[in-house]
Length: 312
Image (tube, rainbow, N blue to C red):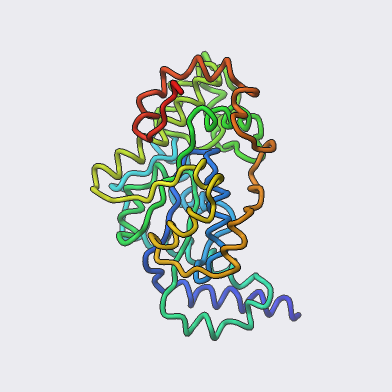
């Protein structure tokens, strides 16, 4: 009975609290396998941030299921940003973030503190947001964006390695779409689906991953340039090599308050929950060297935009 009562109380409180506005939400924008989960897990150590433990794809799929889109993909343009859609997605995100807060140990005892808090901030790390940016800008015009990038050779190598982990990164909703297409080299799609993904499934997996990585990056760069919005660029290598320096940089840019607990966590960050194999420097050279060398001409221009020299 007590468990039922607490569940109903949580649901009621979620409905009440989800009517609050979360000012200056923080969105981590990144291609898959770029280290964004590690960054997200580090940022959750700051107080005052409400978040969903996993990615928020559910909110987008509820409003824009693949089967109802003219061309099945994760791209959602601003023209779909009706008041109803905006309200529904915002409500879903806030409700789940607050429910996550209430599920934490002793959280129900802290409801008074929650109600007294003057400022609420939402933190989100959803890879498909690379293709939701136009819509996101309509929902959260005051959002702050962290643009997380990684050496594309290591990034794409990790995408190749993770492609077969369907249960963790796959898109089962697209399986029937993949199966009906001809001249394919794959049997399923993994990671968010950029618009036009159906035209690349004839290629070999390294090319598919390189193309997908490039689409995630270019969509984000195009949005930030077109809307004249600034983003905080974070390189995975800098986060791993100088975590405390990155901590100080991000806390200043995001207006977050440092604490000893946060600093201690950043000194030796935990291995990300989405890690496929143990990370080490230049892992791509031992995992997929010959494959990565072949696709470098595809990604060189985009890599240069991010400040990576692939000739080194």
